[in-house]
Image (cartoon, rainbow, N blue to C red):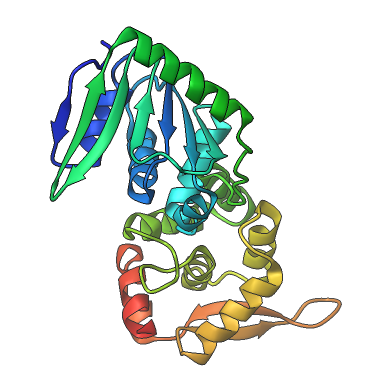
Length: 274
């Protein structure tokens, strides 16, 4: 089934799911909005079936803003690793957000709380558009995702630290809509430290893990730990070692956090940080 007709839906998710289900081998997503990129990653991540190859060409600044959210970035990295998604940077000069296939061109239009994909299958126009945007996507610079894929995060947490901390990390992450650390959610370093503190993990172990897989440097983990400690969310206790300075074991520092289940941890922490 190839999309040739106009689509109308309550939200982007429905439009994108229909397009991804249409049976095309490849989709070009040109000049998307930030909301479109976020929805695309979300729908593709949850998609049950074979996905087409999706090439996104978007403004560099827009992509940087989108991947500030760890949830979006780590899921996008997963799709990139699987060979399903590519992210390229372009000028973003088109007036509309477009989805282009070999057989149709769809313009995404949002009006109020409705979203439409206005389609044309005029053969000459579609052929020209497809050729133009394939060339543009091939020539566009690749956008470098610095966030590790969520699969790498999960597997390494379980292997390097424990199955329990991996499960708690997943639970905390699933309780958040965004993970930016700018008041819209806790960032990935804060989440990692809180989950580590819930499980009495050494600061050395969680910060080494985070640096090794590319979440953040040990220095960033240390600075964030100090901030959370100063605010009373985290405590530490010294653990002697055979050689060198004692290491620090992370503990939750507030009774409300200690009493919270993993799915409540983020909400309680956010309330204490505001």
